[in-house]
Length: 599
Image (tube, rainbow, N blue to C red):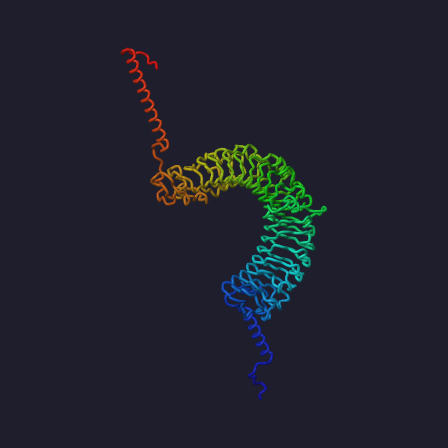
């Protein structure tokens, strides 16, 4: 054979190269194959199936590289061992809203590295045996099932568990030491169950727990010192813990145990505390000494009637406090004084009628004060004294009068909410709010806005006057406001004549006015009068020249003039008849001799 003749077979190196490319192509294709009705993420190595109504656990051709498998909105009913034979190394399984009511003892066989198991919104009546023996699980969520009981051994093998969520079930009892072996737990959510009692042994050994939520249960017995082991706790939610308070033998003792910290134990990490809706009648001011790290404190929906002076002064790091929907009618002279980092105070839904002038003295960082749904009728001069207050919510009160100097001691006030009050006009009410940027006056009874109403509020960017009784408003009212962006005037009984002709977009263009957003308000303006334009939207008026003012007096003036004229005529007629009657009687008595009419 000629040594220069090229061989018809490819060299071994080429064969190996082609084989490698083919294998790579096949593996790549297999990696991206996605089961029907599923969504696959190659980067996350996950398969998520929703929409196809599987009647059992589907046996799919799932690539072995997949680490996360989730099914939602299915009808699985029984979680068997189908997936155990697929050779998968799953780290995360989610079966959410799949009507699962039972699980096989081998359902999780082969998943020795499973970390996350979510079984929310199913029909499980107990924690299945296969879960209790899966020691690798770190995140277990079984909220919104039908679990009604737990035993001491239920979680003992889950030594790696970090998150346990069992909210919205029917659990009525927590055995002592049920979480004893779960020393790695960080989060426990047992809210919205029917738990009847908690002892000092319930959460024993939970030294790493940071979040505990047992809100909305039916606790009738709460042991003293039940929080003692939770030294790392920073988020404690006890919202509506006592939903069955009338059954208590001693309600005051149970409520005291709710927040009593024994033996001077300090919660050096707790930042969030929610003790709303727990039938508390007095704010537990004495407890704050052991919770000096609190940042958020919620005590909504209790039965407080007063806030004592300096009650929160120990909470130097407190940022937000909410006392909404209590029965507070009295604030101590220094109720929120000396809370160094306080940012917001919420007092909505109470019975407050006035504020002590120094109730925030020393709390220099407060920027938001919510007094919605209280009983204020009048805002006096220097209503609130605070150099940093930025937002003030006064909606849904009974305010019908505001002093011209009400806001003179609020130099930073930028947002003012007066929705749902009883103001009838705007003249000088906002004169002292010179830094105001947004003002809400929706749903009052305002029928008149003076041309100088906003003359001192040159920083205004937004004005809302919807749902009032305005029939007209002058364009000059808004001339002093160079930064104005939005003005909303919807749902007022507008009298569409030349006085509001400026609202029409076409007129704005003809006048050369800048087309700010607030100027294009004719899309929302609907005429209530005169009769020929009733119920017509201003934008539908093709020729704005039809918006004319009659040379005759306005209808109200005409009615007034006619009424006065008729009254004068009626009175004159009555006097004339009386005079004739007197003369006739005099003549009758004196035999026809006229004289002075003496009754």
